[in-house]
Length: 306
Image (cartoon, rainbow, N blue to C red; front, side, top):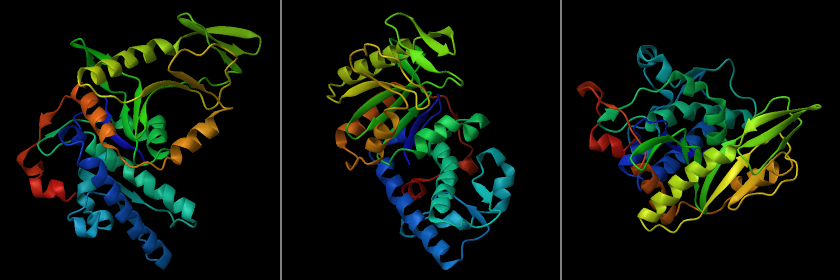
């Protein structure tokens, strides 16, 4: 499950220490999955399973099955409590249930630090595209989703940025229901073929090029040599033949399976250059937050043991 290091203009735990949280998340997720899998095999998986941060490293996510019910009722949009109609019957169902339960946890890390918090739009808890990017890619991929970034002291809405161990992909997800084909063009407009009718479509390359300029300028400022690439991702569409711009790939339904397979089977672990690039991008992203109330704050010990 990819890690959500930046969401919109919310403050992120990853901003405070990009070298701590990605590896910590991977370790705790693996421990927690091991515990849940074992309970499932023993037939002792509770009907109500709740995912929250751990109380100590030795037990992994210790509160996974023990979170207090009143906490969920106080903040239903942030609750990770989920009641099963019945326990998962297959390993595939169990994995999906586990991944779905991680989404609120990810959103918490992407909207809080020890002392500050941002208020997350409830729509993100049901955002199918966000869920897609998080659940389809390995833990070693770091996701910036709908990030508000700074370029030349002005704010800009960035395209999806996926920071992998081997490079950065700047992604525009193209979803056009009922379209037969997409016809790319060198100009500002592309075309969508629906039956015998062609409709204009604002070229996704415009937003991709803006985000590429941001990524390139940030990496250059810090002298970071890390590759980046633009992707127009259209899993359900077909592109008609076109000249593909430099540093760009068009992924349609004919190439999608192989593209996703390559990502999911990346054997490379987190890399220092990857974390350094992510840190630089986060430093030039906007964050709005408030100070957490005294009763809601976490101390350093708890943060290290989450």
